[in-house]
Length: 490
Picture 1 (spheres, rainbow, N blue to C red):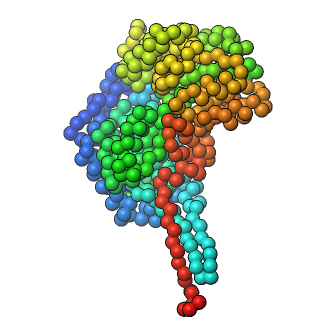
Picture 2 (cartoon, rainbow, N blue to C red; picture 1 turned 60 degrees about the vertical axis):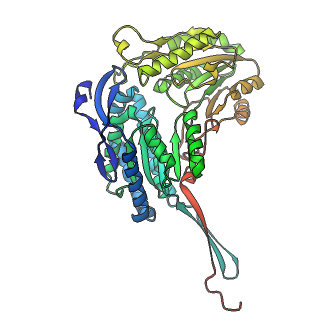
Picture 3 (cartoon, helix red, strand yellow; picture 1 turned 120 degrees about the vertical axis):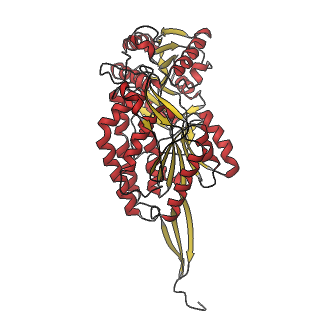
């Protein structure tokens, strides 16, 4: 794949089993070079209306919601198709999204296991039955809720699509997926994978690339009772307010401000490797990016020195270059936004340990590159500490006691994840119990398991994906009371 192939590539929508164009077109850009790699159709209100109609018809008229065996076959088939596509899709993801190739392959490696795990949940449908009096029975059954609107962000389009799509399909729902314009070529590739499965009736999965118009219609449509949204807390709040008038059900995975808490007895050799990667993976454009480093005073000097050296040495470059250790941000606008936040923090008193910043000279200057930045702060109220940066910017705070570490970690409106680093047996579990977050890693970072729930506390979301709880957003419970075989007069 290279930039020369651009003008011949036009990414279309996948609606009701056919490819759909739009009057308005967008341009797909390689963020490492700023060059065009293709065109794409931008979904409008007509496109998404047709997609919702197709999903509604498929839910009502196809066998999808009633045929468990078909859904199991479909999810296993999709898992195999995604696995086979990883080499080619990873190159395209790296080209259009900017991830270095190993990170693109890591993202794609999450898709198939999630599909297979959800396939296993289909036969464990949670129904119940009881005889509560002579000849009197109750049945509790779970039914698919209907059409699900799924909104996918650009930072991990394949993994975050499958994370919502897999449980929705397993539940028997049909779907309309709003995909982001920044990854339109990847979107079309994924749609081709999905469209190739012989087990999916037309209209069960519909994929539309677009932005606010598409999402707004999904939130407003009476035929879409559930929205599964991954994105910013600000947008989540806005669509929740809009959907409240229709009692819309929302599953939210929103922003994060993940702290890494490093105690004096931590294994620094292991911790600093992970902390570096927690900042540079996906160029810091990750809801679980390790963006706050809390270090106990006894090791603070060593951490400053060693981590600064590591971040200074990170080799930024195109995601497709095997020598690159961190790719570009998604676009130049993100570079400007991140840099403005850093400049504001410095003006407010943050101490520069590693300035990093935009690459403005040499062959990388045409791309959206931002070198890792490390700032030490003493005021936890600074914007750079409290708000999600969505870039490779790390703040360092020094603490003295366990209680202070917990207080600083919880001093955030976000509560998605945290990591705790210590060689003690009891301390990490004690701290984990006090952290107001949905996931805690002890001496680790970003380990996710399909069989265990993932989601946030506070302003980081509501509901859970992965694990057993991921089905709840997509199901209704129905109680049926019956009295077969009761004799008259009895």
